[in-house]
Amino acid sequence: MSTFGNALVLVALLVHLAGFADSARLIGMVQGSAYLPMALFSYAAGAWADRHSPRLVMIWTDALRGLAMVAGGVALEAVPGFGSGMAVLLPLVFIMGTLQSLFIPGVVLLCVDVERQLAAGGRRLRVLGLRNAGSHGATLAGNALGGGLYLILGLPALLVFSGLGFVASAISEVFLRESPRDKPDAAYLTPRKVSGSRAAPAAALLAELRAVLNTPPVDLYLLVQMAIPILTMVLPSFLGEILGLPAQALGPVFALLLAGSILAGLGSSIRAGRGPALSSARLDYLPGLLSGLLLAAVALLGKTLPLPLGAALLIGLGYCLGSLYLRSIEAVQNASPAGRGGRGHGLLESLSSIVTPASYFAGAALFSPGAFGKGPLPLKPILAALAGILSLYSLAGLVLRRSPNSR
Image (cartoon, rainbow, N blue to C red):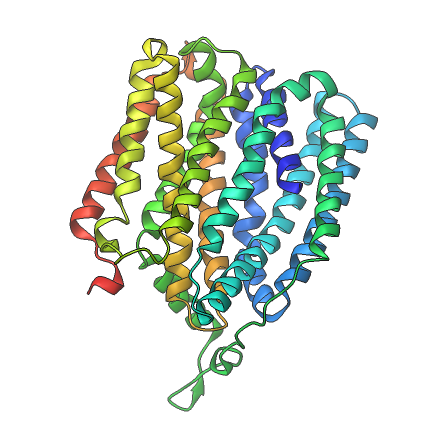
């Protein structure tokens, strides 16, 4: 319920900002403000989730997000106008990002705990894949309806609707059954002794950071997180100038991408325990290579792209991005010591949330009025360049990188 409402607001917010002359810059500011708290607080949030019940973390963060969004909708209605509206939206997305940084490690840990309990009983099920498919299914529905409902209800009403969804989600999570969890390793709960002295916490954090960065395909995942903001910022203009579609087509486009991600999650859960696993060293970077090729096809063909083929390419792109995300989470969880899964995922989210707002803010400056003169943005070259970077980097990873399990 909360994911559906959140997806409605995302599309409505993008459509709302697309109505302004400098929409790319505004999208960059708002999206950057949403991701900035994830960069600041994700590691601490992961540590908090390691020490507390993931279920309770989910309940409280959903409830607080719901109240914040309802308050934001009421405030936006009470203070109309562009300047006052941005004064409400920027703090709101920052608060939502802060609470999201707590929620994500909680739900990931809950899924991992369930997977391990099932494995102990002789059953293998990719709960993370199923969770990804389910949440993206709700997001797909919200994205598909967001543009149309924005025209009918307006942004303040959609904020209130989404907030009520978060509250309802928190109430439903009260009835979740939580599996017993592995106790954290005591060696990680206190400062370690090295040569008779206590190791600095910063040194332990740096060691964990290096471990996460050296886990394929985290580097490729972070590169994709740098590219996605640029794609998001140019997408409204790309739809209108290159494809000849209205801004409301953002919803169906996001829905197609999420449909591919849902297929990736379902495919991950179906493949679990069926036959010998292929060498991950040969597969970790393949989604990035395919993503680059699919993005290049969409960018270069433009209006000549038949609708069924365009939809298939977008679904394929979503499948590749969803597979890369799931593989990165699973790889980090497998590499994390017992009781440190929340911290490992917190570092992954923190790294992602550092590069993503940086890319949004850099894109906002790049796409500001006058950055490209008075002419239109060179959309096709931008997309083609991103596609080339993803393809070449992924190809290099396929040839040069090896996962730790393959050594």
